[in-house]
Image (tube, rainbow, N blue to C red):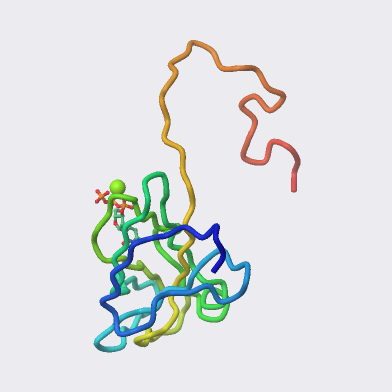
Length: 149
Ligand SMILES: O=c1ccn([C@H]2C[C@H](O)[C@@H](COP(=O)(O)OP(=O)(O)OP(=O)(O)O)O2)c(=O)[nH]1
Ligand SMILES: [Mg+2]
């Protein structure tokens, strides 16, 4: 914990410890499933996994719920709505929408680290309606316009 860490109110109704950073400069905190019983995900099945966590983010901040690369690589487990967005005015339970993209069943156990949460600042837009947009070298090029590979 250093002095630049952002204070965030949290209610932990799970049976697990609060999420914490695994290494000194980890961007995300791993979120644990808070389950009464294991949840089995068949291939291509999805499930909303509860965490038992409720947070109050300061205005101007969001939390992103992102997949963990180890689960993705080893078991094909990802997040359907990745990255999930937790709004600063959300007061419900944080849930993780897992999907099994492998061809094998995967069992989510209570306490398993199923996702990671990154808190970030965001900007809100004030539209400035215009007739033309500033010219650029890219222009409307995209979708591979800069090369064949
Ligand atoms: O992975 C997620 C994504 C969202 N949420 C919660 C927090 C978020 O603030 C709220 C709404 O999420 P989102 O805006 O992505 O969903 P929506 O389908 O647009 O629902 P709504 O109409 O309630 O905004 O649901 C989660 O707990 N986990
Ligand atoms: Mg929404």
